[in-house]
Length: 275
Image (cartoon, rainbow, N blue to C red):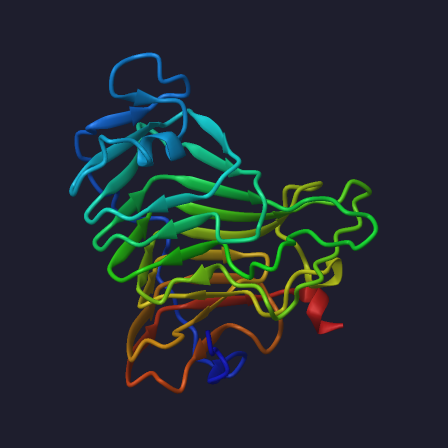
């Protein structure tokens, strides 16, 4: 995505509403459930098994038990329209531990909604190349049009066994090809696995990690991600909290944008970038 347009940084007028008071979207009654073992009818051990099953039809609701943490070693593709994936009574965690030759999450279906789900993307440890995410992929999520992520989370977790985190894909990595997506009340973070805290600039965080969407609202970005409009001619970027960014980074308005609303965003800069 071309995010080389005007960048809103330290000269922006900032005023923000709270991002803590996001109304919770009602979770519809699930048709099938991911419960970790799949021993009963219409239950599945993991999300990929549920999505690939014959039960998935237009409008199917996939529930995930709220206290569940499930590892996925292969990518998840949702190609059916109007599918809902939702955490039940809490926010379950999908831990992706596969390779990065392609995006781990692909949503081709129109009108898909994902809510109350946390996705963790773990990099690997390679002391020779210090590469956390290899395989040639530059994104974690790909979507078509009219896809909504609500009250969810995406964590990109850097892993180095000796604690010396190095991210060697600066400028070439993004959350993904998500121009048709809306992110509402969602947290997007780049984390240091050793500390569990957002990665800082001095620890090698990526300098060009953008979240691109037609709507980014009431979201929290930690550890360096920024917001961009990408190829959208119309976009809404409101009431977001962007923290740990560099001193000239924040929100990028692409040259394709014609009607963009940017208001109520709070940007907190990383002190390590001021030295």
